[in-house]
Length: 380
Ligand SMILES: *Cc1c(COP(=O)(O)O)cnc(C)c1O
Image (cartoon, rainbow, N blue to C red; front, top):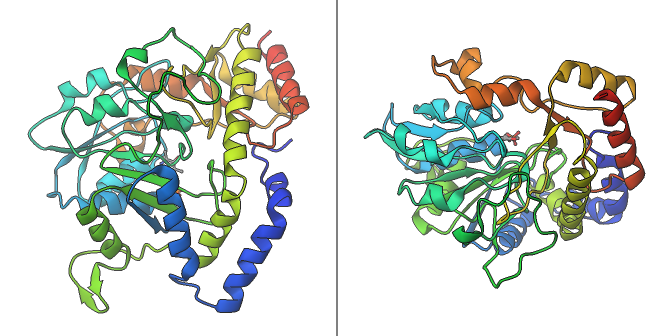
Protein backbone atom coordinates (compact mmCIF):
# COMPACT_ATOMS: atom_id res chain seq x y z
CA UNK A 1 0.00 0.00 0.00
CA UNK A 2 1.21 3.55 -0.64
CA UNK A 3 2.23 5.80 2.26
CA UNK A 4 0.17 8.57 0.65
CA UNK A 5 -2.22 7.57 -2.13
CA UNK A 6 -1.99 10.31 -4.77
CA UNK A 7 -2.87 7.92 -7.60
CA UNK A 8 -6.42 7.23 -6.38
CA UNK A 9 -6.90 10.94 -5.82
CA UNK A 10 -5.83 11.73 -9.38
CA UNK A 11 -8.05 8.96 -10.76
CA UNK A 12 -11.04 10.52 -9.02
CA UNK A 13 -10.27 14.04 -10.28
CA UNK A 14 -8.67 13.24 -13.63
CA UNK A 15 -11.33 14.72 -15.92
CA UNK A 16 -11.35 18.05 -14.14
CA UNK A 17 -7.61 18.35 -13.55
CA UNK A 18 -6.76 17.37 -17.13
CA UNK A 19 -9.25 19.92 -18.49
CA UNK A 20 -7.89 22.65 -16.24
CA UNK A 21 -4.31 21.92 -17.29
CA UNK A 22 -5.37 21.88 -20.95
CA UNK A 23 -7.01 25.29 -20.52
CA UNK A 24 -3.72 26.75 -19.29
CA UNK A 25 -1.86 25.19 -22.21
CA UNK A 26 -4.43 26.77 -24.54
CA UNK A 27 -4.31 30.30 -23.14
CA UNK A 28 -0.56 30.14 -22.53
CA UNK A 29 -0.37 32.56 -19.59
CA UNK A 30 2.01 30.38 -17.62
CA UNK A 31 3.00 33.10 -15.17
CA UNK A 32 0.27 35.00 -13.28
CA UNK A 33 -2.46 33.64 -15.55
CA UNK A 34 -6.15 33.86 -14.62
CA UNK A 35 -6.02 30.66 -12.52
CA UNK A 36 -3.69 32.40 -10.05
CA UNK A 37 -6.29 35.02 -9.12
CA UNK A 38 -9.07 32.45 -9.26
CA UNK A 39 -7.26 30.25 -6.76
CA UNK A 40 -6.36 33.16 -4.47
CA UNK A 41 -9.99 34.27 -4.38
CA UNK A 42 -11.24 30.74 -3.65
CA UNK A 43 -8.68 30.11 -0.90
CA UNK A 44 -9.18 33.48 0.81
CA UNK A 45 -12.93 32.80 0.95
CA UNK A 46 -12.36 29.31 2.28
CA UNK A 47 -10.00 30.47 5.05
CA UNK A 48 -12.13 33.54 5.77
CA UNK A 49 -9.47 36.24 5.36
CA UNK A 50 -9.17 39.25 3.05
CA UNK A 51 -5.96 38.32 1.27
CA UNK A 52 -4.45 35.18 -0.19
CA UNK A 53 -1.13 35.43 -2.02
CA UNK A 54 0.03 32.29 -3.80
CA UNK A 55 3.78 31.69 -3.78
CA UNK A 56 6.35 29.22 -5.11
CA UNK A 57 6.37 26.91 -2.08
CA UNK A 58 5.66 26.67 1.62
CA UNK A 59 9.26 27.62 2.29
CA UNK A 60 8.87 30.74 0.16
CA UNK A 61 5.65 31.58 2.00
CA UNK A 62 7.47 31.57 5.35
CA UNK A 63 10.36 33.61 3.97
CA UNK A 64 8.11 36.23 2.35
CA UNK A 65 6.02 36.53 5.53
CA UNK A 66 9.18 37.18 7.55
CA UNK A 67 10.51 39.68 4.97
CA UNK A 68 7.21 41.58 5.02
CA UNK A 69 7.66 42.40 8.71
CA UNK A 70 10.71 44.64 8.05
CA UNK A 71 12.75 43.23 10.92
CA UNK A 72 16.38 44.08 11.72
CA UNK A 73 19.28 41.63 11.31
CA UNK A 74 19.68 39.62 14.49
CA UNK A 75 16.12 40.11 15.66
CA UNK A 76 14.75 36.98 17.29
CA UNK A 77 11.90 34.78 16.15
CA UNK A 78 10.54 32.18 18.57
CA UNK A 79 9.75 28.81 17.04
CA UNK A 80 9.64 25.08 17.72
CA UNK A 81 12.60 22.76 17.21
CA UNK A 82 10.31 19.86 16.29
CA UNK A 83 9.42 20.66 12.70
CA UNK A 84 10.63 20.43 9.13
CA UNK A 85 13.87 22.35 8.54
CA UNK A 86 12.18 25.07 6.44
CA UNK A 87 10.74 26.69 9.57
CA UNK A 88 14.12 27.63 11.05
CA UNK A 89 15.79 27.86 7.65
CA UNK A 90 13.66 30.79 6.54
CA UNK A 91 14.28 32.61 9.83
CA UNK A 92 18.03 32.35 9.24
CA UNK A 93 17.69 33.25 5.53
CA UNK A 94 15.83 36.41 6.56
CA UNK A 95 18.84 37.39 8.71
CA UNK A 96 17.03 36.62 11.95
CA UNK A 97 17.77 34.34 14.88
CA UNK A 98 15.60 31.31 15.65
CA UNK A 99 14.95 30.92 19.37
CA UNK A 100 13.66 27.45 20.09
CA UNK A 101 10.98 26.71 22.67
CA UNK A 102 10.27 23.09 23.58
CA UNK A 103 7.08 21.25 22.63
CA UNK A 104 4.19 19.74 24.58
CA UNK A 105 4.92 16.03 24.92
CA UNK A 106 1.39 14.97 24.02
CA UNK A 107 0.47 17.22 21.05
CA UNK A 108 4.04 17.84 19.83
CA UNK A 109 3.14 21.51 19.19
CA UNK A 110 5.06 24.39 20.77
CA UNK A 111 4.50 24.69 24.54
CA UNK A 112 2.95 28.12 25.04
CA UNK A 113 3.65 28.10 28.75
CA UNK A 114 7.37 28.21 27.93
CA UNK A 115 7.24 31.02 25.37
CA UNK A 116 7.07 33.98 27.74
CA UNK A 117 10.37 33.05 29.38
CA UNK A 118 12.04 33.04 25.95
CA UNK A 119 10.89 36.56 25.00
CA UNK A 120 13.64 39.21 25.06
CA UNK A 121 13.67 42.84 23.87
CA UNK A 122 14.88 41.49 20.51
CA UNK A 123 11.98 39.08 20.04
CA UNK A 124 10.04 40.43 17.07
CA UNK A 125 7.84 37.52 15.96
CA UNK A 126 6.63 34.03 16.85
CA UNK A 127 6.42 31.23 14.29
CA UNK A 128 4.44 28.30 15.71
CA UNK A 129 3.94 25.19 13.58
CA UNK A 130 0.56 23.47 13.37
CA UNK A 131 2.25 20.08 13.35
CA UNK A 132 0.72 16.98 11.78
CA UNK A 133 -2.36 19.02 10.89
CA UNK A 134 -3.41 20.22 14.36
CA UNK A 135 -3.47 23.97 14.95
CA UNK A 136 -1.09 25.15 17.71
CA UNK A 137 -2.42 27.18 20.69
CA UNK A 138 -2.95 30.19 18.43
CA UNK A 139 -5.14 32.31 20.73
CA UNK A 140 -2.68 32.06 23.60
CA UNK A 141 0.23 32.77 21.24
CA UNK A 142 -1.52 35.79 19.71
CA UNK A 143 -2.19 37.09 23.22
CA UNK A 144 1.57 37.53 23.74
CA UNK A 145 1.28 40.62 21.54
CA UNK A 146 3.90 39.91 18.85
CA UNK A 147 3.39 39.33 15.10
CA UNK A 148 2.60 35.64 14.63
CA UNK A 149 3.30 33.59 11.51
CA UNK A 150 1.51 30.23 11.61
CA UNK A 151 3.54 27.60 9.75
CA UNK A 152 0.43 25.88 8.47
CA UNK A 153 2.21 23.78 5.85
CA UNK A 154 0.60 20.67 7.34
CA UNK A 155 -2.71 22.08 8.53
CA UNK A 156 -4.59 23.62 5.61
CA UNK A 157 -8.23 22.66 6.14
CA UNK A 158 -7.93 22.26 9.93
CA UNK A 159 -10.54 23.90 12.16
CA UNK A 160 -10.13 25.74 15.46
CA UNK A 161 -13.09 26.76 17.58
CA UNK A 162 -11.29 27.69 20.75
CA UNK A 163 -13.32 29.26 23.44
CA UNK A 164 -10.62 28.75 25.98
CA UNK A 165 -12.95 27.08 28.48
CA UNK A 166 -13.15 24.01 26.24
CA UNK A 167 -9.39 23.52 26.24
CA UNK A 168 -7.30 21.13 28.28
CA UNK A 169 -9.55 18.13 27.97
CA UNK A 170 -8.31 14.71 29.06
CA UNK A 171 -5.03 13.72 27.48
CA UNK A 172 -5.51 11.99 24.19
CA UNK A 173 -9.09 13.20 23.98
CA UNK A 174 -10.53 12.68 20.55
CA UNK A 175 -11.87 15.61 18.60
CA UNK A 176 -15.59 15.75 18.11
CA UNK A 177 -16.06 14.41 14.62
CA UNK A 178 -17.58 16.88 12.25
CA UNK A 179 -18.02 20.29 13.74
CA UNK A 180 -18.43 21.48 17.31
CA UNK A 181 -21.68 22.44 18.89
CA UNK A 182 -22.25 25.30 21.28
CA UNK A 183 -22.38 28.03 18.67
CA UNK A 184 -18.65 28.76 18.84
CA UNK A 185 -17.20 30.35 15.77
CA UNK A 186 -15.22 27.84 13.74
CA UNK A 187 -12.02 29.39 12.43
CA UNK A 188 -9.66 27.92 9.89
CA UNK A 189 -5.94 27.27 10.06
CA UNK A 190 -4.10 30.02 8.09
CA UNK A 191 -6.64 32.61 9.22
CA UNK A 192 -5.71 32.74 12.90
CA UNK A 193 -2.83 35.24 13.16
CA UNK A 194 -0.84 37.99 11.44
CA UNK A 195 0.16 35.56 8.69
CA UNK A 196 -0.81 32.01 7.84
CA UNK A 197 1.62 30.21 5.54
CA UNK A 198 0.83 26.93 3.84
CA UNK A 199 2.38 24.54 1.33
CA UNK A 200 0.97 22.71 -1.68
CA UNK A 201 3.82 20.18 -1.78
CA UNK A 202 2.17 17.05 -3.27
CA UNK A 203 1.95 15.12 0.01
CA UNK A 204 0.35 17.93 2.05
CA UNK A 205 -3.40 17.87 2.79
CA UNK A 206 -3.97 20.19 -0.20
CA UNK A 207 -1.22 19.47 -2.73
CA UNK A 208 -0.37 20.39 -6.30
CA UNK A 209 1.79 18.45 -8.78
CA UNK A 210 5.03 20.20 -8.00
CA UNK A 211 5.87 23.05 -5.64
CA UNK A 212 3.44 25.70 -4.46
CA UNK A 213 2.29 27.56 -1.39
CA UNK A 214 0.16 30.41 -0.14
CA UNK A 215 0.07 33.23 2.39
CA UNK A 216 -3.02 34.53 4.18
CA UNK A 217 -3.62 37.77 6.05
CA UNK A 218 -6.28 40.35 6.86
CA UNK A 219 -3.69 43.16 6.87
CA UNK A 220 -3.79 45.25 3.67
CA UNK A 221 -0.29 46.70 4.05
CA UNK A 222 1.31 43.33 4.76
CA UNK A 223 -0.52 41.79 1.81
CA UNK A 224 0.77 44.55 -0.48
CA UNK A 225 4.31 44.04 0.85
CA UNK A 226 4.10 40.28 0.22
CA UNK A 227 2.80 40.80 -3.33
CA UNK A 228 5.79 43.03 -4.02
CA UNK A 229 8.32 40.71 -2.37
CA UNK A 230 6.93 37.83 -4.45
CA UNK A 231 8.07 39.59 -7.64
CA UNK A 232 11.51 40.90 -6.75
CA UNK A 233 10.23 43.74 -4.59
CA UNK A 234 8.52 45.46 -7.52
CA UNK A 235 5.83 48.01 -6.73
CA UNK A 236 5.54 48.68 -10.46
CA UNK A 237 7.24 46.99 -13.36
CA UNK A 238 10.99 47.67 -13.01
CA UNK A 239 10.52 49.77 -9.91
CA UNK A 240 12.13 47.69 -7.17
CA UNK A 241 10.95 49.32 -3.97
CA UNK A 242 12.32 46.70 -1.63
CA UNK A 243 14.28 43.47 -1.51
CA UNK A 244 12.28 40.61 -2.92
CA UNK A 245 12.51 37.09 -4.32
CA UNK A 246 11.33 35.20 -7.41
CA UNK A 247 8.48 33.62 -5.51
CA UNK A 248 5.44 33.21 -7.77
CA UNK A 249 3.41 30.02 -8.00
CA UNK A 250 2.91 29.05 -11.63
CA UNK A 251 -0.44 29.04 -13.34
CA UNK A 252 -0.35 25.30 -14.06
CA UNK A 253 0.06 24.47 -10.38
CA UNK A 254 -2.75 26.86 -9.46
CA UNK A 255 -4.95 25.02 -11.98
CA UNK A 256 -4.11 21.70 -10.29
CA UNK A 257 -5.05 23.04 -6.85
CA UNK A 258 -8.32 24.41 -8.26
CA UNK A 259 -9.09 20.89 -9.47
CA UNK A 260 -8.18 19.38 -6.10
CA UNK A 261 -10.48 21.83 -4.31
CA UNK A 262 -13.48 20.19 -5.98
CA UNK A 263 -13.48 17.34 -3.49
CA UNK A 264 -11.43 18.91 -0.72
CA UNK A 265 -14.36 19.12 1.73
CA UNK A 266 -14.92 15.41 1.25
CA UNK A 267 -11.20 14.73 1.70
CA UNK A 268 -11.12 16.66 4.97
CA UNK A 269 -14.11 14.71 6.27
CA UNK A 270 -12.38 11.47 5.24
CA UNK A 271 -9.14 12.53 6.95
CA UNK A 272 -10.98 13.35 10.17
CA UNK A 273 -12.85 10.03 10.07
CA UNK A 274 -9.76 7.94 9.23
CA UNK A 275 -7.76 9.69 11.96
CA UNK A 276 -10.52 9.10 14.48
CA UNK A 277 -10.75 5.44 13.47
CA UNK A 278 -6.98 5.00 13.81
CA UNK A 279 -7.07 6.62 17.25
CA UNK A 280 -9.88 4.29 18.32
CA UNK A 281 -8.29 1.11 16.92
CA UNK A 282 -4.95 1.96 18.51
CA UNK A 283 -6.38 2.81 21.92
CA UNK A 284 -5.51 -0.53 23.50
CA UNK A 285 -2.02 -0.84 22.02
CA UNK A 286 1.16 -0.09 24.00
CA UNK A 287 1.89 3.17 22.20
CA UNK A 288 1.22 6.86 22.75
CA UNK A 289 -1.35 8.51 20.54
CA UNK A 290 -1.13 12.16 19.60
CA UNK A 291 -3.35 14.29 21.83
CA UNK A 292 -5.87 16.31 19.84
CA UNK A 293 -7.34 19.19 21.85
CA UNK A 294 -11.09 19.39 22.21
CA UNK A 295 -11.34 22.84 20.67
CA UNK A 296 -9.79 21.93 17.31
CA UNK A 297 -9.43 19.04 14.90
CA UNK A 298 -6.44 17.46 13.20
CA UNK A 299 -6.36 16.91 9.43
CA UNK A 300 -3.50 14.42 9.86
CA UNK A 301 -1.00 15.60 7.25
CA UNK A 302 0.85 12.74 8.92
CA UNK A 303 -0.81 10.15 11.10
CA UNK A 304 1.85 9.91 13.77
CA UNK A 305 2.10 7.89 16.98
CA UNK A 306 4.89 7.47 19.52
CA UNK A 307 6.44 4.12 20.39
CA UNK A 308 9.37 2.82 22.38
CA UNK A 309 11.84 0.71 20.41
CA UNK A 310 10.93 2.50 17.22
CA UNK A 311 13.62 0.89 15.05
CA UNK A 312 12.24 -2.55 15.88
CA UNK A 313 8.66 -1.47 15.19
CA UNK A 314 9.58 0.22 11.91
CA UNK A 315 11.50 -2.84 10.72
CA UNK A 316 8.58 -5.13 11.55
CA UNK A 317 6.12 -2.88 9.70
CA UNK A 318 8.48 -2.72 6.74
CA UNK A 319 8.70 -6.50 6.68
CA UNK A 320 4.89 -6.63 6.69
CA UNK A 321 4.76 -4.33 3.66
CA UNK A 322 3.58 -1.26 5.58
CA UNK A 323 5.42 1.92 4.57
CA UNK A 324 6.26 4.32 7.41
CA UNK A 325 8.15 7.59 7.82
CA UNK A 326 9.72 9.55 10.65
CA UNK A 327 8.62 13.17 11.11
CA UNK A 328 11.23 14.11 12.36
CA UNK A 329 14.25 12.07 13.45
CA UNK A 330 16.26 15.01 14.80
CA UNK A 331 15.07 18.26 16.37
CA UNK A 332 16.46 21.34 14.65
CA UNK A 333 18.66 22.46 17.57
CA UNK A 334 20.54 19.20 17.00
CA UNK A 335 20.93 19.70 13.24
CA UNK A 336 24.37 20.97 12.21
CA UNK A 337 22.96 23.96 10.32
CA UNK A 338 20.86 25.18 13.28
CA UNK A 339 22.81 23.73 16.19
CA UNK A 340 22.32 25.49 19.50
CA UNK A 341 23.61 24.42 22.86
CA UNK A 342 20.18 24.23 24.42
CA UNK A 343 18.22 21.40 25.96
CA UNK A 344 14.78 20.60 24.54
CA UNK A 345 13.96 17.34 26.33
CA UNK A 346 10.44 16.92 24.95
CA UNK A 347 11.48 17.50 21.33
CA UNK A 348 14.43 15.17 21.77
CA UNK A 349 12.25 12.45 23.22
CA UNK A 350 9.59 12.84 20.53
CA UNK A 351 12.25 12.66 17.80
CA UNK A 352 13.25 9.24 19.13
CA UNK A 353 9.72 7.87 19.35
CA UNK A 354 7.53 9.24 16.53
CA UNK A 355 6.52 7.09 13.60
CA UNK A 356 4.03 8.01 10.86
CA UNK A 357 1.65 5.47 9.34
CA UNK A 358 -0.02 5.41 5.90
CA UNK A 359 -2.57 8.21 5.64
CA UNK A 360 -4.61 9.78 2.90
CA UNK A 361 -8.24 10.48 2.11
CA UNK A 362 -8.38 7.35 -0.05
CA UNK A 363 -7.02 4.94 2.58
CA UNK A 364 -9.57 2.11 2.81
CA UNK A 365 -10.78 0.48 6.01
CA UNK A 366 -9.20 -2.78 4.86
CA UNK A 367 -5.83 -1.08 4.42
CA UNK A 368 -6.19 0.61 7.76
CA UNK A 369 -7.02 -2.70 9.46
CA UNK A 370 -3.91 -4.19 7.85
CA UNK A 371 -1.76 -1.38 9.28
CA UNK A 372 -3.24 -1.76 12.75
CA UNK A 373 -2.84 -5.55 12.64
CA UNK A 374 0.81 -5.28 11.63
CA UNK A 375 1.45 -2.66 14.29
CA UNK A 376 -0.16 -4.85 16.93
CA UNK A 377 2.17 -7.69 16.00
CA UNK A 378 5.18 -5.37 15.86
CA UNK A 379 4.49 -4.21 19.39
CA UNK A 380 4.15 -7.70 20.87
C1 LIG B 1 6.38 21.00 4.07
C2 LIG B 1 6.70 21.96 5.14
C3 LIG B 1 7.30 23.21 4.88
C4 LIG B 1 7.84 23.59 3.53
O1 LIG B 1 6.93 23.53 2.48
P1 LIG B 1 7.50 23.36 0.97
O2 LIG B 1 6.31 23.64 0.13
O3 LIG B 1 8.02 21.99 0.85
O4 LIG B 1 8.56 24.38 0.78
C5 LIG B 1 7.48 24.08 5.94
N1 LIG B 1 7.11 23.76 7.18
C6 LIG B 1 6.54 22.58 7.48
C7 LIG B 1 6.12 22.29 8.89
C8 LIG B 1 6.34 21.62 6.47
O5 LIG B 1 5.79 20.45 6.79
